[in-house]
Image (cartoon, rainbow over all chains, first blue to last red; front, side, top):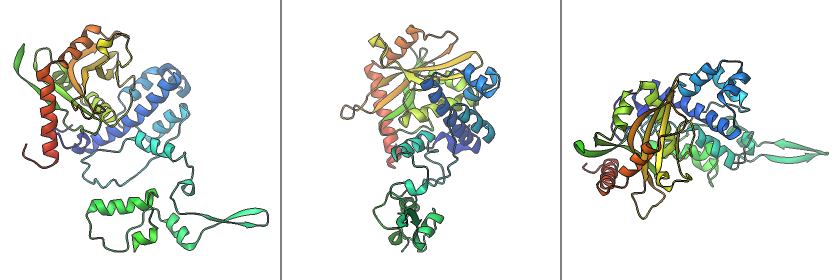
Amino acid sequence: MSVMSELSHWTQGGIDDFVYSISAGYTAQLEVKMEKEEVSQTELAKRLKKTTGRVSQVLNDPGNLGLKVIVEYAKALGMKVSIVAYDDGDPGNNRGPIRPEVFVKCWEKAKCPTALYEVEGAPKVATKTKGSTNVTVLTPAQTEAIGTPTPQPSVTFGGSQRERMNTEQIFTTGNSHEEPIEIYG
Amino acid sequence: MGEGPLEFHLVAGIRVTAIRAVGFLKGDKGLTAWAGFESLKPNRRRLILDSMDAWVGGSIDIGKRFHGWHSDSDPRVRECFVFKAREGNVGHRLYGFLYHPVLKNPAFVVCGLVSYAIKTARESDRAELLHAVAWGKRAYVVNLISEALARNEKHKTGGVG
């Protein structure tokens, strides 16, 4: 672990710190769930067919967890896992990772969509009736938009990296009142 | 009293957010949190830093990582706070007090870490909690906190520290 100034995030020093933070953030989610549902480490170990010592080690010193372990532990508590890559306009990691609970809260606030088209503000899907069946029809522009969730701007922006990032985020998060066509010029 | 002038340092690498900040109080033999934290193995320090990150970001208590005593029957310890890490059967604890330094913004709270303890019993030592809270009641301590926050703000805005 590196020594840093007050204004640098503690995970800025190296990939080990960053990885630890991600693992610890994940196991914190498990602990919240265990607390809420009163699942003890012994009970979790039983569900996982592992020793209590091993479970305790994973929860108390998560370190560099493998994907399989991550999925197993979540599943044992009735949860799922997604791996999310994101661009928060902080390539130097001055602010540290976005914590998983932030993503979860946003997803819950968006009424837990299970697909992109259910996300408010995502490109609209038109429907029309064919006989007694509703058929979903996407315009070419919509198909293109859904198929390329993080497109590169086709014009050069004069603004800063942060401004460019915001512009892209507007599209990918679907929070804009603007039409995508205006964003990409 | 002490081993030198009292100092309050925001934890390096942990942001001051709009709602929370955390720092170490140093400079007295009763102030053991900083030395205790430094003595931990790197992964235990990382776990505590991650917990601090979660807390300043707005997470509510996670019993095994950090928590306060907000609804304790003893009002004296309600402003106490702890960050935890476990190593085998040994529990590492960093105890501190909660303090609201900005009158106009009562939602903003600082956790001033005071003491380090190794815990083996389930219940916290009440004397430890009262010791931590007592430091947060001292006028010169809260002045140090305000100064540290002002320094941080100056750094952030590019002013002369």
